Image 1: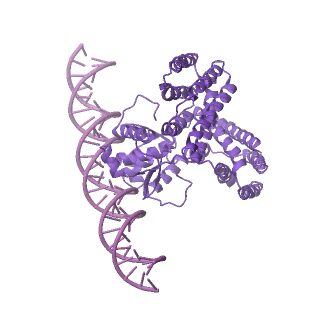
Image 2: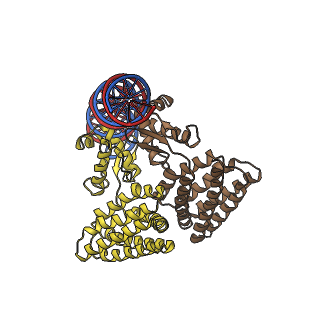
Image 3: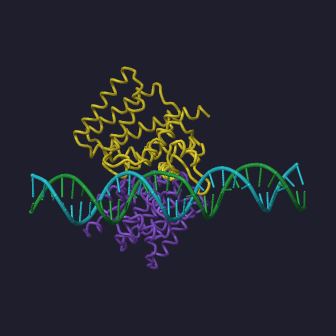
Length: 221
Length: 221
DNA sequence: AGAGTCAGTTTTGTCGACAATCTTGCCTAG
DNA sequence: CTAGGCAAGATTGTCGACAAAACTGACTCT
């Protein structure tokens, strides 16, 4: 859905993308109710388009809908985070293993180049790394798995929710440097075509990441 | 979406369920184009309802849609099957592990009872087991994981596609007895709360199952 | 003859109106 | 005073019409 580039973009698509962004980044608050008419004026489209967007967001697990009652944005809870990261650890671990097997040499070279760029940014204290860099790293490995089901489940289904937790809890701090080291080791394993190690390291990386977010989340409640 | 029971059922829901059934069971052929107007007369609802159904089916990976062009039912291919089962093995393996941890004693007792029923059916040569029984077994373990993300990904997202491959390739034969034995061992591991073994046995069971379907599929091409 | 173009047809995308359902707050009965 | 029900208002569900885009096939020009 998202990772195919060559197709037309309808108004519904644009609304959906903006809508999703607004939810992920907290412009529309977590756990708030979504009024179709209200949203249709906000985004200047008809209710049909809004309804379609809400349906798509439901598929992403970003909103929950009840028939004849309405939809609301999901709430961010410790339980939800744990469940999400359990699935993520499993799937991205598999992605790393498949990437070690299926990425082309060129793609691996690009991945290493990306890592060098990030290294420079970390050294320069450019915190931009945290968001875009981390995302890009995971994206490339997910795509490198070459498994379309896996790709779609992660990118269309799980990733935006992960980002929602991260953005809304304001992830920053010393984790950046640690995470970079973990990325480096994963890429090394992939470069060596060591499938098993790539999976283990990726799972560990995500597990650490979970602990970090969990700490923030619990401290906020 | 599917596993919550207490909510109203709209016309769109009913259409979606029937529509999905028709695709999974081959009433609507794999890889065929879907005309919205045609379907709206077939199911006696407006195009809006059909469009919503198609969107939901796209989320299930049962149809693919291109903007301004239309939707078509997915094709059944060996590559698609392999990709699907890779993900399934990973996720259901995790489900078995979580089920060994999270199912209540009562739920485990029910699962054992279910197995006894199946044993009787297998012994009586009742081939009904193949579909409903196998499905029920996997459903209970998935639900037993108590992880809502995992449950929704598997049941709303993957399971119907698995069933589509199975139904349309006409799974029958001696595999039934073997599969029953595998089920028994998985349940034993869950009963013993042996998380690691439960995962391993479930993964192996699914892997065998894949080989069996793959054989059929390749022989048909 | 083949490639490109253009108009007609068909199909999808978007919209606003109407119908069905739920929610809210008042009123009445016990 | 509380519980239940009823009516008014608001929200969601469904529909058919219109707009926009893609496909089809005939026609022209090289």
